Length: 165
Image (tube, rainbow, N blue to C red):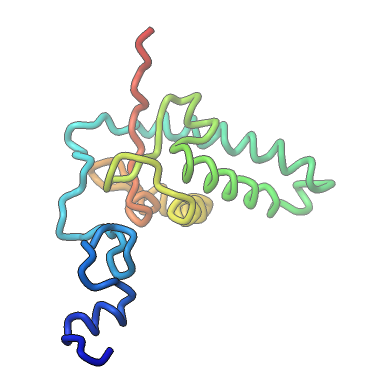
């Protein structure tokens, strides 16, 4: 690094090549969300899913998880943990990648990110599913109809747009 200026030395240490534009993907320039930016999804303009639709979706998902878990253990009455595990893992996979589970699809609702309106990703969906499995965070909601699990995952349940044929 001899003959380099201080800024170039810092750039080399940070893994960036001096003289290159700082495009996303270069080390030190990863895309992040900032709390100073307003959310991309305006909760005033979207139709937030009602408690009834959310409950219908949850009951359907729980029934599917029960059916799948019944194939994994002899008796769910003796060992109910596989049922909860299937529910949380299925929730994390489907909500994380597609924004909705089977029950949510039937209830015509979606779980979207407040930041960009897209799917929330598997890690945030896993946290959301674990908190939803505890049930108490889901019962505490704010004026926007978002439970504690939605707040932590930075998500919101919205009505799915109708497809025009």
